[in-house]
Image 1 (spheres, helix red, strand yellow):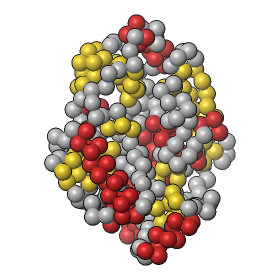
Image 2: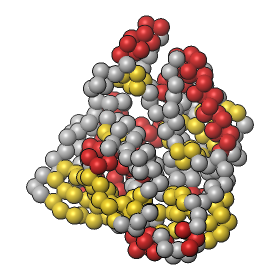
Image 3: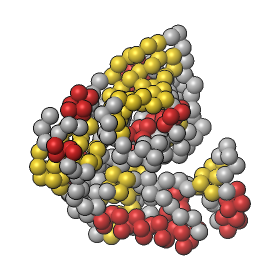
Image 4: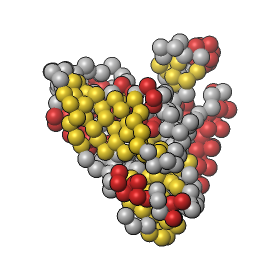
Length: 338
C-alpha cells in the first residue's frame, strides 16, 4: 500500500471531471484496508472512498485522502439444486460480474446489465433497472468499519434498502467501506420482461425462447441506444431519481398533462418518469457550454469535454427548478455531490 500526493482524479470519475486529490491510495485487499486504518495520514485526514467513480460529481478538489477500492475476486460460496450464493469483491466491474453470472447460468441480475460502476456501489445505491433491484438478490454485504477496523456482515434486512437508498447512504454514511457483496441467484430463472421496452426488443431480436442471456442482450441493446458511453461522453448515468408522489398528486397532474408517464407502486403512490418531466420542460438536449442534458435521454447530464463539476451542478439546479415550476414536483439528485 502506497499513499501518493497530488493525483488527478479525471481517470477515476466517469464524468471526466478534472479534480486533484491531495492524497491518494489504491487498496487491493482487505488486509491492505485494515493496514491503512493504522496509517498516520489516514488518521489525520478526512477520507473519500472511490469505486468505479460512476455515481459522483466532483465540484471541487476533495480535501481528503481518496481511497480507490480495487478489491477483486468472484467466489462460489455454496449451491443447492435451485440456488447459488456468489460472492463478488467490491472492486469488480459490475457489468463484468453480471456477464460472469450469465455465463454460469445464474439468474437474477440479467436486467441489471450494462449499469456502470463497480460491485461495491450496488448495495449502497440499491441499483435497479427494468423492474429489478439489488435488494431482490443481495444476500449479505461484508464491510470494514472505518472507525474500529472491525469486519461487519450486513444481512439484506440490515441494509435497509429503499429506492436508490440503503443504510450506507445515510445512517452509516462514510462509516463503512464495502469489501464484498454476496448474491443469492437462481438456477431456475424467473424472467422480468414487462418493464420498459424489453418485450419489444426481444421481438425485434427474433427471440422465441426466453433466456437470461437474451434478456441481458435486450437490456444492453436498449441502454446502448439511449444512454451515452462514458468513455466517449462524460456522464454518470441517471442523474436524478424518479420522484414518488401520492395518488392524489398523480391524478391532478394527469388531468393537466394527459401524456404523463407514471408507474403505480405497491404503497398506492406513483413513480413519475423524471426523464419525461425534464423533456416536457423543454430541457432535453439543452446545453450550457460543455455541460448538457443528453439529447436522447433527458435523465442523463453529460460533460461534452471541459465542463467543470460546478457547471454540471449548476445545470442540474436549472433542471430541478424548471421542472418544479412546470409540474410542482421537485427532482432529487441520485448522484453523490462532492
